[in-house]
Image (cartoon, rainbow, N blue to C red):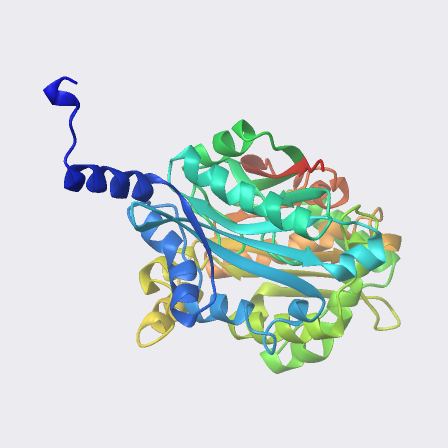
Length: 396
């Protein structure tokens, strides 16, 4: 045997250790420390990316606590970390929403909180774990990225990687879709997002039309003196949301527990000047729009923490900002084709002008949801982001 073929026991042991370390190891999250690693991994992954917006760390922790997240009462979930070279290289959460299964007859494993380095052995190991999880539960489909419900963040970014993320949208590197498609997953749902450069002057036809519609149907816009006056309308808003979107194929009704959770989670960020509510002559809520100043820069500066100084950045973003985000819009089906959108946009325009807002972004809207997209059609919207979920049928 030639001399250079010989390996000493120590050299061979080192070779084996290196090979083992190069393999991807998947580990289920089971401790508080591992959950912290799970939450903080993307913050490290995107540390030098100017468009990534971190979530609030405490809110991320609350997602995995039954007392804080009502979806856990009807869902199964597991979280996993991927390790390579003894370092965290990826993460994934797997979920089964039994309410969705029962009410819509949809049986699938949802995957979300998906992040990974640009290494296909890592992304493959994570998706393989999702497939394994589905087979263990005798489910024949996986889909993601998404959360527990249709009000959670969803959709992998496929266009707009150079745009600043929003508080309610997922962000990912450009290589993510390529990895997922190479693994055999295909497009399931597509979302579009628009950016609108607010005009200096609202078109005269919009002003006149909004007045005519308000008079014709005896509609009025509510003016709130304080945030507390909004509280009685929170539940009617969510009920109206159900009415607005129940025709969509993926929509499930919002439970009372979810309403309570979302109210507690987002109400502190609400500014009464960014809420538009329209009622009919019986004082019934027929439409609403929730917008907020953009908190993207505030979240970046706070690095995922409100305390000790993160709250200051949020306060400043609320006071001085030239950008806003749409979060939720609801219009009762009976009024969706009656021009109510003109009233909404007129109110938004007048309020944003007073607050110095020049740009606004819509929230992700399903490509099929034309009734909401019609809101922007007269204001030169630019489709600046697209995102999608990917799915795979699992064979036995």
